[in-house]
Image 1 (cartoon, helix red, strand yellow):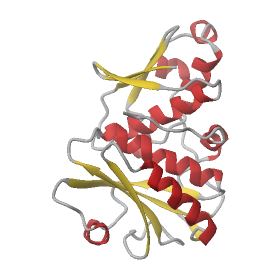
Image 2: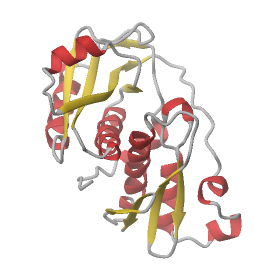
Image 3: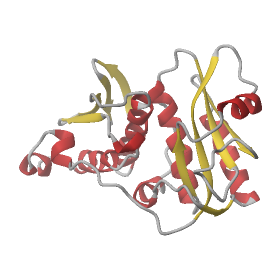
Image 4: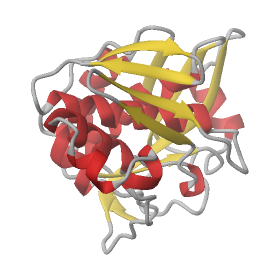
Length: 238
């Protein structure tokens, strides 16, 4: 589970990505074609990602009518939805596009009809995609010391792949920027663990996004992430 071929350029995309609500247009046909190829690669392990152009997004998203729908079989871990969906986000960013994860910013009746949702499937989120209208706003994140519960000297003692992985994980987007995770890191592993937040509806998906960022950071040092379920979250060895 969480097996994915990570593109090295996603490392830069993590730092360029921001949540965009206003666009100057949709993706080009070439960009849509490239994203469509990736959607097929991401559609497995209980998750299917499909692209649509047309009605479905609510009025707070302006300038694009293109979106990706994350369809999950029931009992699929929400972290997997976030992991695969964020891979699409980073690839769209690499292609020069803007994106925005939406849990409430879409019309479920229209989207469910477009997808022809089956009885054993569910949709929690969609991703708006288009030509970004700048400037954008990047919310503040908790510091590495807060996220990892380590002081500066302990963080400086981490290996290069671990430090990059936690830095990338810290930058992950989350619903209303709650960052519903804590990170534990030692000499051989990094864990993304549950953190209680005020609104937990999308917390599992958000943790999956964080996990993908951590895996991208490890990949920058030619280390492939292998995730294992542990008490309170998931642990990565790389």
